[in-house]
Length: 212
Image (tube, rainbow, N blue to C red; front, top):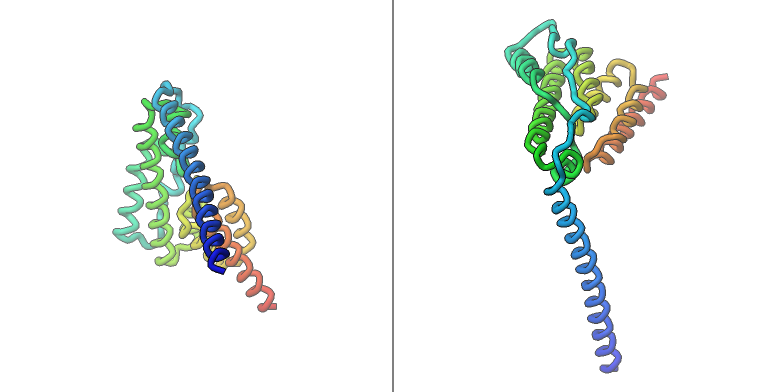
């Protein structure tokens, strides 16, 4: 009996050791691959940035005239106008290594600036939409969020608020377009955003069916 217990313990130890060795081998291989990509990225020559998808803030956003303009709304609009003079690119989901490999190490600073401007953009757009909604300017809030989502934003609140606005406006069928847009974003929040939108869509459909 003791021999069987001892044999079992030894067997478990061996199995654990083999599993641990396998995991360490996988991790070592991943580390090697990472550093090899870093090495290649460090020697990648500077390349043109012509193929970047530059974002232009549309006039209807920059020249927006809400019925009741507050100091906070005006400040946000001023910041958006200031931001419009910079180059803006959505690089969400791309690591510095990815960018260096594609555009060269010498471009990493300027690309980081472009992405920083994009982060500022979607943050300001979300704030603008929230303030417009609070002031009863839902049409302008929806317009703002539609632009934000067209740029590929991964700000989950932008999707959820726009879905709510669609429901309030009786156009819940538009939530499907939000789901399709969310399927193309590069973020770890992607699945959560899609699931939440699907729930909002289902609830809207249920509410409509109960209304008849």
